[in-house]
Amino acid sequence: MTAPLKAIDGNADLAALMTDLAANARAAARVLALAPPEQKNRALAAIAAAIRAHAPAILAANAEDVAEARAAGITSAFLDRLTLTQARVDGMADGVATVRGIPDPVGAITESWQRPNGMTIERVRVPLGVIGVIFESRPNVAADAGVLCLKAGNAVILRGGSDSFRSCRAIHDCLVQGLREAGLPEAAITLVPTRDRAAVGLMLSGLNGGIDVIVPRGGKSLVSRVEAEARVPVFAHLEGVNHVYVDASANLDMAKSIVLNAKMRRTGVCGAAETLLVDRAAAATSLKPLVEMLLDAGCEVRGDAAAQKVDARVKPATDEDWGKEYLDAVIAARVVDGVDGAIAYIQRYGSHHTDSIVADDATAAEKFLSEVDSAIVLHNASTQFADGGEFGFGAEIGIATGKFHARGPVGAEQLTSFKYRVHGTGQTRP
Image: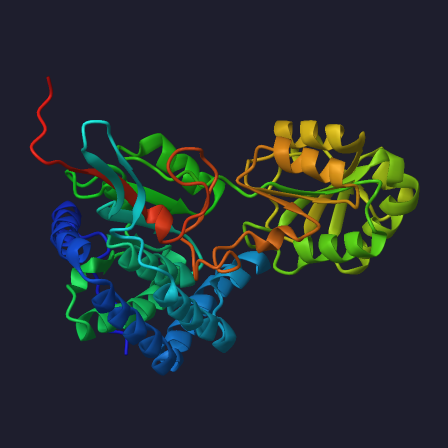
């Protein structure tokens, strides 16, 4: 299904190519902004069907990407993010169907009030315009970002990682097929057709006003580059330095289940826990079983003096281990002085992504949820729920860790802005 790779890498006229892509996306965005919900939903239904129908082609393309990455000596966690399976392709299609079923955010009136002079003012959701999404490794982001932008009436320019180039092309073919069947412009979802890294720099420049906002989804180096070089607004997505704090009041069996899932369900996702914090008041009873459970599950533990004492397999933690995103079967572990100590530690070393408390004490839980300044805070639940699909958004473009415009899972609603509509009956200002 996917066309042969074209030898355009290193194209001397890459700047012109990217400018043309942005111009076409801008024209498509004007069409999408006015497209009725029914038309967008027809496209989404067709996209979901195309993904299911062309799963063999998607998996074949992905197998080539995986083989190339494995030959390059890529880590197992990276391979997990890159690899697609039939279940993951089915999940991708299911996510598209969920996005189709959520209310259309465009045109929704979020507030309405009347002024003393009789004028009525409405705040109405509108698309952002053209969104540039720069991502690494996970090819399913092409589908997630494409359909969320479509639902919110935005055009999108996707630039996937070079490692997932073939997979993204195969997925993009399905997205375009859905647009075509619904009579929407194919440029509404554009995939940058080159591995040339210079394309990223051109997108960050804004392409002469062709891009309204950039969403980076990848590792720390990518996000740092985007935030340093972007000439357009950015939905910040910092690394997931996530913590699970086990309070003295926690049920130990629950704590073990949550900690194991938070760390080991999928170690390479941004919602994976990277640090275990244990209340000093519970260390005598909880630290050893938690640490041994992780070690026995194949997780390397790097701990403070207390953690090292409970098991000889625990490696000494260095200063670099506190605040580190491993994205692998490695976790840092240490004892803290109660919920206040956990909050202070997370404030110092966390990335404002996702943090969880395991506690039966409602007061401790409420304090944690109120005072931990992260985009997602959980009580008695795994950090791996940091996912737009688990929030009912169908999909997500990423987990925004900044505080402007969007925070947490970025779904369709977060990909809109608003304008004010004012209805008068001839009023003039004195």
